[in-house]
View 1 (tube, rainbow, N blue to C red):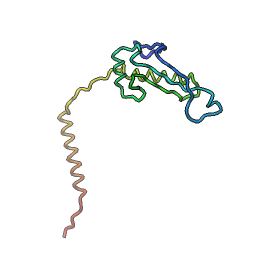
View 2: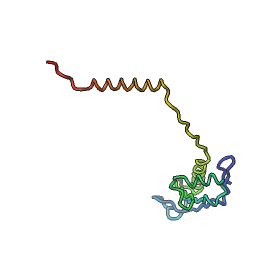
View 3: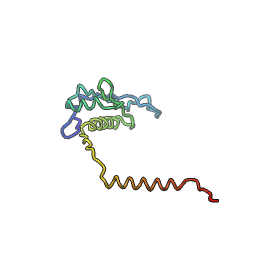
View 4: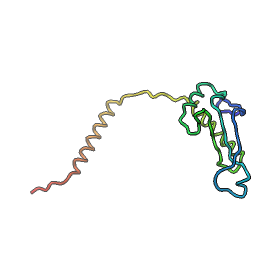
Length: 139
């Protein structure tokens, strides 16, 4: 089980992990060892609550395909085990992002004192700039 939060856990059978060869330069084992990991998680077929599924599908994230599949490629480490852990941690971060409730903003009005202070600062700034003009020669 992959534990996301206290009340959300994902069974590992819902996550498809495939070992692939890493990109980039490497040493002698570059063409022999598959250390990178491709993780695929189908949001619609998962056991997540419906509200989280909707939020995940509406996320603007390049790792989520149009079909509702989260695809994560992990190749940061030279070890397949570490890359697998990294991919699972990144999946947890994506899911946790939608579980956090966003507080709605309560619009407020500026106080009378803050309005007065703003106007005073504007007057001071205006005076400074007016003094920067060309100097008139007196004859």
